[in-house]
Length: 208
Image (cartoon, rainbow, N blue to C red; front, top):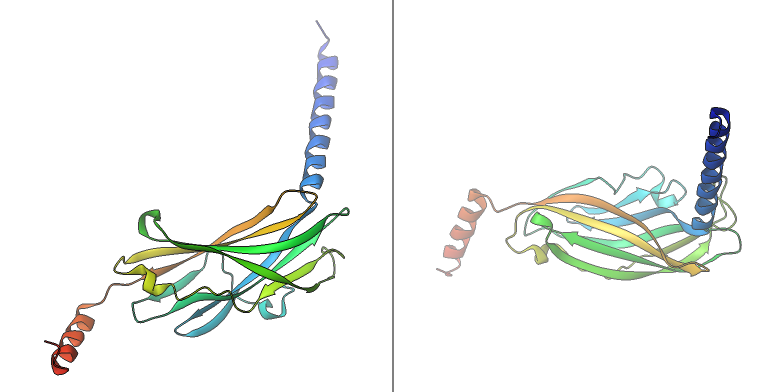
């Protein structure tokens, strides 16, 4: 039987080996990826840039998107993601070759209402102060092509979750997903007052 001191030494060596393995895997996994993003939420009230990226001029102190409550909407309102930007990094001779923003809208009960992909073009090399590095890049689009989401909701009232993620493609690794980042909003049913006003207006217009 080995002495207790030998066992302790063996445990320390195994622990050191596991630590080195974890660090090595972490470095390899971080050859490239994402570290900042914004989305422009355009609705009935105007446009609001949301996200997590203090180095984007449009997001210097902007409110977060992830975990946000976007508010309450009804059938006469509008809501969409009109623009998006993302920051990527690359290390150790790797390269980022493309960024795709994916969005998904989930309704009450987890029902998927809408989803889609939107390629984001390369904007410029974004060499920024530490902790960033010379491999930082900015990608962006001012027109996602995503239409108004409200008409898709029909009469399914309740809480909705709007999510975005960024699929970052490059070499020498397989694509990496940055996200998802999710915000919620409420789709409200018409009130009794709204229905009564609609009935009065319809009758006045000779529709009844």
